[in-house]
Image (tube, rainbow, N blue to C red):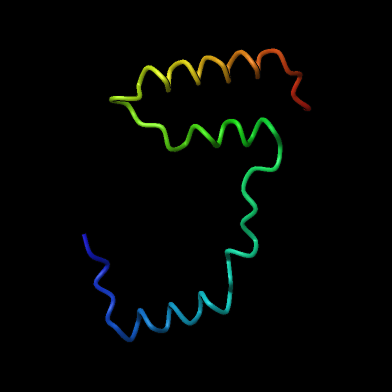
Length: 70
């Protein structure tokens, strides 16, 4: 489904985004736990489903063994 932006609207939006530079404020996960959970974002079911399940179990076991701050 298209958003039906005109070339002019796209150009104006592109210029605004270049001025805002939102990528400068995107840091991603900074903690070890956050990075470990973030590493699971790209996993899909299918050929790697078994690997994904094993990795999820390993992450869950790790997180269960770590006391998270409140």
